[in-house]
Amino acid sequence: MSDDRRKLQSTARQMLEGELLFSDPFLPAGRNPLPPPAASAAGAPAMTAEERAAALQAMDVNEVRGCTKCRLHQGRTQTVFGEGSPTAQIVFIGEAPGEEEDRTGRPFVGRAGELLTRMITAMGLKRSDVYICNVVKCRPPGNRSPAADEADACRDYLLRQLQILAPAVLVTLGNPATQKLLDTPVGITKLRGQWQKLPLLIPGLGGIDVMPTFHPAFVLRQYTADVRSKVWADLQEVMARLNLPAPPRRKGAGL
Ligand code: SF4
Image (tube, rainbow, N blue to C red):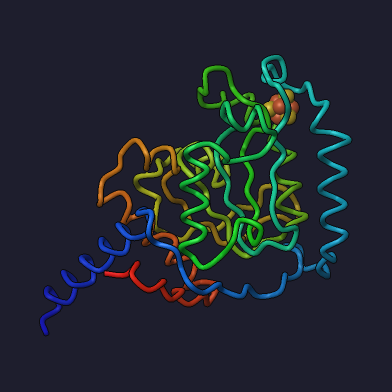
């Protein structure tokens, strides 16, 4: 078989799988086991799950919930710290809480959140296997993107969350999260699908593998086979990096 034909077949398969990922009947029958937590980015011995959970909760309760470091505190109903496994190997990072998140105090619970959940499920995982958070912890008015000074004010919380979690992979969702974490002006369209390394943002935090991909809200707005297959390809990269096999599909949900 020629290289061109093989490439064409691979692209077609990718697009079909992308279609399945975002279609309702797709639910994997299996669930992927995740590897145990690694040592911290600084090489220190890994904290236990209980220690990580306690450190995250202390930051949330004692610092973030009462935070007034930027103007976003004025319009929030409540802060949205993040949620998931304290020993997560994958952290998904979005931009900012939206209306539903502001109301519930949980990240990614609106329509975009439903899509993110479906993406995680397609990887053979559950939301509780991963960790999900945003660059800023308070909802910007009118769901606008956070301003640079707002993201800067909230940066310390995010970096300390990542220090505690010490994940193997970060998946940045959309432009603001990608540019903030990678400290780059390059846009998501150029960066998505290509492995990056987290720069040394603070001592002890750097070198983590980063996979930039489109934000689920963008996917909902641009609901094309091309966009969906690109996101699925990015998630498959993450699965390959963590040695997670493609989960078997339920009967009747396949091609
Ligand atoms: S967005 Fe972050 S820095 Fe700004 S008030 Fe909320 S918690 Fe504080």
